[in-house]
Image (tube, rainbow, N blue to C red; front, side):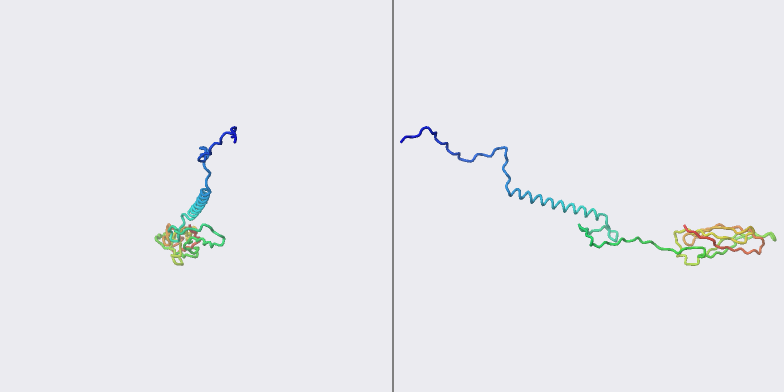
Length: 197
């Protein structure tokens, strides 16, 4: 039997697979990709919760209870049209006082000095005595009432004066000097106007 010497002998197969090239990293496994998706989803949920918490805290920051204490209840993160709305509390308007006018007071004159000159008449100094016809607590304690009045009996005509009423009972005025035609002349006064400030 003749051998064929023209064919070289076959090389033996390698004992192990060739190594990975240094520049190409191994492909990620399916398990690593699944973990990355779960971690990314969890991060998105946490970010949404933190953002909602910041919005809720910012919306309720500085709110107080009826007692003036800071509110400790957290607002809901979503509001619907069906949620009841608390009515806005109107501030207390404070006490009200009745309107004061010329008919609210009576006035009399008190003579503090008189000097007569026979048939030439008299010089008389008078002061107003005012009486409020209601309860003094009905008057506004913070208001200043300017009460204008006329004195009749002066030989040259009516004398107009103004008194101020403050703190419900404090009356300030200037005494009036009246010249009468005779000692028998009667003096009278009437309130003509009242304004308040």
